[in-house]
Image 1 (cartoon, rainbow, N blue to C red):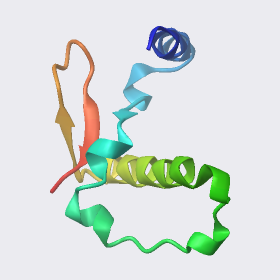
Image 2 (spheres, rainbow, N blue to C red; image 1 turned 180 degrees about the vertical axis):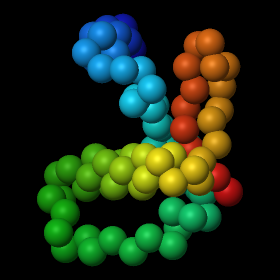
Image 3 (cartoon, rainbow, N blue to C red; image 1 turned 120 degrees about the horizontal axis):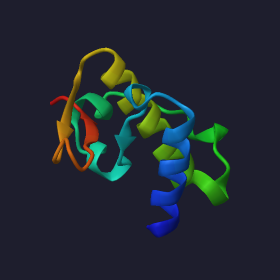
Image 4 (cartoon, rainbow, N blue to C red; image 1 turned 45 degrees about the vertical axis):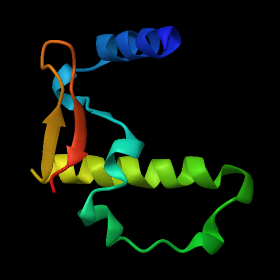
Length: 86
């Protein structure tokens, strides 16, 4: 976690914080909107399938954010996690 926070701080120093969102794929998996997405699993690497699914989930969550179909969870002063709107 400490390394993650350090990377996040370094990243924020490079860009405007208005362009950064934090997502947590496990929090987004249960959202009905994402259950409608069909993925061709033959394109996946067996060793990294979970990571690849998480990446797709994060990308879809970012799409929801930029299309105003999201909700923010947590304290705005401490940082919020973005999940698709139910």
